Length: 275
Image (cartoon, rainbow, N blue to C red):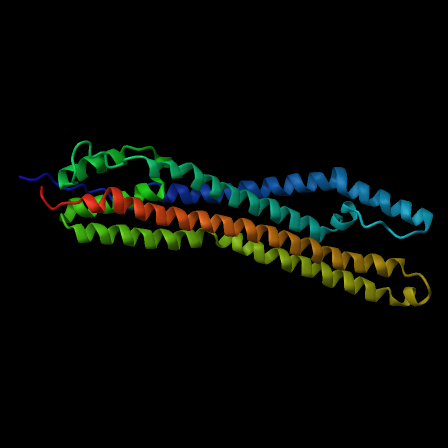
């Protein structure tokens, strides 16, 4: 009599806790980003900007376009907060991908001297994978193997096992795309915040048109500086975050392709329907 197939679900058992952990991480990093950036502004950027503006006013000269002057406005502060927040989220995901890649160099099936993987071998391998710690089980290659092994143990069909691995790969690809929605929103929001600063600066400049016609253009130039500086900072930050986002997507796509290749080399090619 053959053994009963494993009955555990192929859905990662840490999926709910992982989503909750991601949410808590995003909330925590947002609060930390607000505190860190605002502290830097209070202690360094705003005092230095005020000193330079006061000195320029006393000497009746134009304000030098220094880093403090460029970053002093609230729109730029918001952009810096969003930059730090998005960088933390992307950095964590990149770190997770790099840490879990070492499973691609390990024989997770542990066939020993067996040239093929039978249902009995698959059961033993499945028990070993379920015994891994939770972080290890979150690895894409581990979950792909679990999906394929469970289908093979339950049905004894090589085609079904192959389909299970492919279906899991497709679902992981969609999940990875969904998990990047917050980062995409931040990258979209930063230019919008910069545009708000542009509109505010131009509006202030237009309100001082009469003063400028009277010969005092300092107020208008300062307001136009707010408009251009906010757009300048927002665009630079967006370019940087898009680069990080591109690198993360490359890592995720490569991890998915490598996991499917691993399953093909180490698992699917060795399957046999002999019990």
